[in-house]
Amino acid sequence: MVVSYTQEHVYRHPWHRVTAAAWCKFTDPTARDASGGALAHILDVHTLSRDVDGRSGRLRAVRAIAGRAPPLPFLLRGLLAASPGAGDVVVLCVERTDVDAAGRDMRVASRNATLRGVVEVEERCSYAPHPERPDEWTLFRQETTIRCAPLAAVAARVAELVERRCAERFTQNADKGREVVERICEDLAAEQDATHHEPR
Image (cartoon, rainbow, N blue to C red; front, top):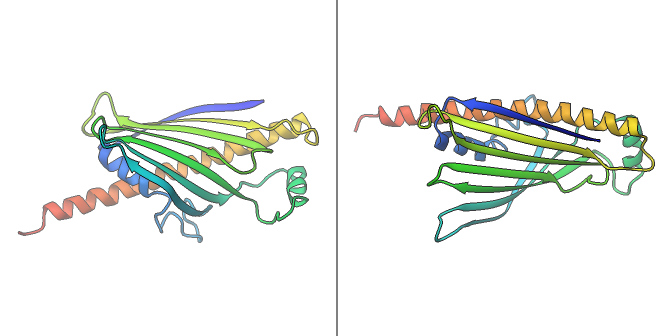
């Protein structure tokens, strides 16, 4: 069984501000504050590669993101606990970003690199100027697919529960991520306003 869904969100901020905020969301200290930050489940972020194409000006980056996995059904927790080195379940994701600043287009594709024997999560996001207000707003689109691996030890019902629980948690985390991007956009806008109003 596969669970797929698509979400859209309109940021009432220009493309350059929203994409700057999106780059910062996983490393923002307030968002990752363990005492209740929206992204407290994110443990670490590393940039694996980053390059700019000299001809097109496109930025391409690959990041590794480590985070706590959502709570799993009892049977799967037991299976993972039987695995060597299992303790707190940490999932490692790989995120590939392609930015065309001149064309105001940013695309992000991510997938889990660990726990793929249990569940596969793939996400594709795009940030583009809103068609009705391209200089003021940004349209964010997120497509997510969650697929439970066909394990002989896991009945179809448990697989369905895993997919549903992952989808619920992923949706909650995506909502929190959008809230963080909104807050960072507000911070960037306030910073820009303060800079423009400083006496020279």
